[in-house]
Image (cartoon, rainbow, N blue to C red; front, side, top):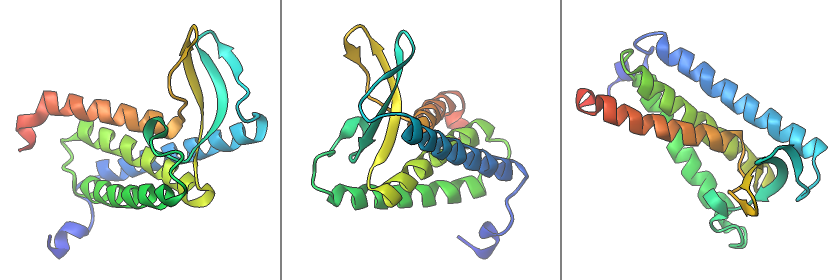
Amino acid sequence: MNADSLQQPQSKVPMLLFVLVTVLVVLDQYSKYLCTLYLEMGLPVAVFPGLDLLLAQNKGAAFSFLDDAGGWQRWLFAGISVVVSTVLTLWLWRLPRQQQLLGFALACILGGALGNLIDRVMLGYVVDFISVYYAQWRFATFNVADAAISCGAALLVLDVVLHGAQHE
């Protein structure tokens, strides 16, 4: 990596992607703030059949993996988030203008990672509040950041399918 590669991005597209990252982080944090303010822990509020708002604290990773590990996982997951966010930021910064789908995917993943990182560092857990269910079966409770990461991952797969050979 030379000094020129860390200078200005190659186009305005990466800057717009960083705006998207910022919007996702703000939307995630604001929605978590509102839910923490107005919802009671563990008490579902029906939005419509199949969707509740259900305030939860996740000390683990996806699907509450290592949720009850004793606290050390907070810093492990925070460290992983910092590393991933740094790599994604550098990747976005250097992304060619033509790779718009890839850029959008990476921006969604970065915005979600940063939103959950803020929770993990500031609170020691991630605030979740979106609960999807069918009959008695509930999917994992999640948040805006998780949704952004999931959408970004799906778009990343789509980009590989559509443009994989072109990116090499």
